[in-house]
Length: 95
Image (tube, rainbow, N blue to C red; front, side, top):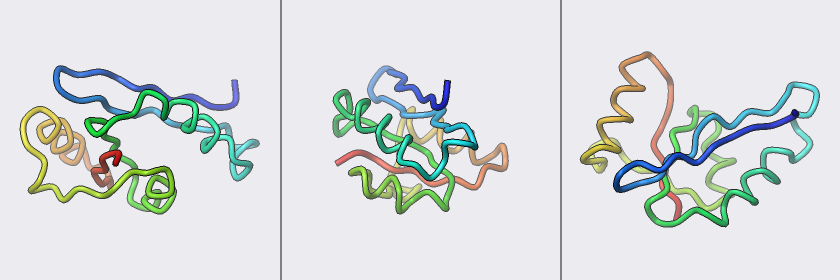
Protein backbone atom coordinates (compact mmCIF):
# COMPACT_ATOMS: atom_id res chain seq x y z
CA UNK A 1 0.00 0.00 0.00
CA UNK A 2 1.39 3.40 -0.93
CA UNK A 3 -1.51 5.72 -0.03
CA UNK A 4 -4.69 5.85 1.97
CA UNK A 5 -7.56 8.14 2.85
CA UNK A 6 -11.19 7.85 3.79
CA UNK A 7 -14.44 9.71 3.47
CA UNK A 8 -16.53 9.32 6.61
CA UNK A 9 -20.22 10.14 6.58
CA UNK A 10 -21.60 11.87 9.65
CA UNK A 11 -25.25 12.76 10.16
CA UNK A 12 -25.23 15.95 8.08
CA UNK A 13 -21.75 16.16 6.55
CA UNK A 14 -18.85 14.07 5.24
CA UNK A 15 -15.25 14.31 6.41
CA UNK A 16 -12.26 13.54 4.22
CA UNK A 17 -9.54 12.35 6.58
CA UNK A 18 -6.58 10.04 7.03
CA UNK A 19 -4.93 11.00 3.76
CA UNK A 20 -1.34 9.79 3.74
CA UNK A 21 1.25 8.71 1.20
CA UNK A 22 4.25 6.48 1.91
CA UNK A 23 7.45 8.56 2.08
CA UNK A 24 9.02 6.85 -0.95
CA UNK A 25 6.03 7.88 -3.09
CA UNK A 26 5.50 11.46 -1.93
CA UNK A 27 5.86 14.23 -4.48
CA UNK A 28 4.78 11.97 -7.36
CA UNK A 29 1.10 12.95 -7.59
CA UNK A 30 -0.19 9.93 -5.68
CA UNK A 31 -2.31 11.95 -3.22
CA UNK A 32 -3.80 13.98 -6.07
CA UNK A 33 -4.68 10.80 -7.95
CA UNK A 34 -6.27 9.25 -4.84
CA UNK A 35 -8.30 12.35 -4.03
CA UNK A 36 -9.40 12.76 -7.64
CA UNK A 37 -10.95 9.30 -7.39
CA UNK A 38 -12.56 10.07 -4.05
CA UNK A 39 -13.90 13.38 -5.41
CA UNK A 40 -16.64 11.46 -7.20
CA UNK A 41 -18.27 11.30 -3.76
CA UNK A 42 -17.59 14.91 -2.67
CA UNK A 43 -20.35 17.50 -2.46
CA UNK A 44 -20.88 20.87 -0.78
CA UNK A 45 -21.21 19.10 2.59
CA UNK A 46 -17.73 17.54 2.37
CA UNK A 47 -15.16 18.94 4.79
CA UNK A 48 -11.52 18.26 5.48
CA UNK A 49 -9.21 19.46 8.25
CA UNK A 50 -5.71 19.46 6.74
CA UNK A 51 -2.55 20.70 8.35
CA UNK A 52 -2.00 24.40 7.65
CA UNK A 53 0.82 23.89 5.15
CA UNK A 54 -1.45 21.74 2.93
CA UNK A 55 -3.95 24.52 2.18
CA UNK A 56 -2.62 25.19 -1.37
CA UNK A 57 -2.87 21.49 -2.24
CA UNK A 58 -6.46 21.12 -1.03
CA UNK A 59 -7.41 24.43 -2.65
CA UNK A 60 -6.17 23.06 -5.98
CA UNK A 61 -8.62 20.16 -5.54
CA UNK A 62 -11.66 22.39 -5.06
CA UNK A 63 -11.69 22.94 -1.29
CA UNK A 64 -12.09 26.42 0.21
CA UNK A 65 -11.01 27.55 3.64
CA UNK A 66 -13.75 28.06 6.21
CA UNK A 67 -13.21 30.34 9.18
CA UNK A 68 -13.77 28.69 12.55
CA UNK A 69 -16.57 31.08 13.48
CA UNK A 70 -18.46 29.91 10.36
CA UNK A 71 -18.46 26.28 11.52
CA UNK A 72 -21.56 25.31 13.44
CA UNK A 73 -23.11 22.15 14.79
CA UNK A 74 -21.37 18.78 14.63
CA UNK A 75 -18.72 19.80 12.08
CA UNK A 76 -17.69 22.76 14.25
CA UNK A 77 -17.63 20.60 17.37
CA UNK A 78 -15.45 18.00 15.64
CA UNK A 79 -13.02 20.62 14.34
CA UNK A 80 -12.68 22.33 17.72
CA UNK A 81 -12.04 18.92 19.33
CA UNK A 82 -9.10 18.33 16.98
CA UNK A 83 -7.73 21.82 17.64
CA UNK A 84 -7.91 21.20 21.41
CA UNK A 85 -5.61 18.21 20.83
CA UNK A 86 -2.96 20.67 19.65
CA UNK A 87 -3.24 20.04 15.92
CA UNK A 88 -2.21 22.89 13.62
CA UNK A 89 -5.09 22.46 11.19
CA UNK A 90 -7.62 24.48 9.26
CA UNK A 91 -11.15 23.75 8.11
CA UNK A 92 -11.98 23.49 4.42
CA UNK A 93 -15.16 22.67 2.52
CA UNK A 94 -15.54 21.34 -1.02
CA UNK A 95 -17.08 23.78 -3.54
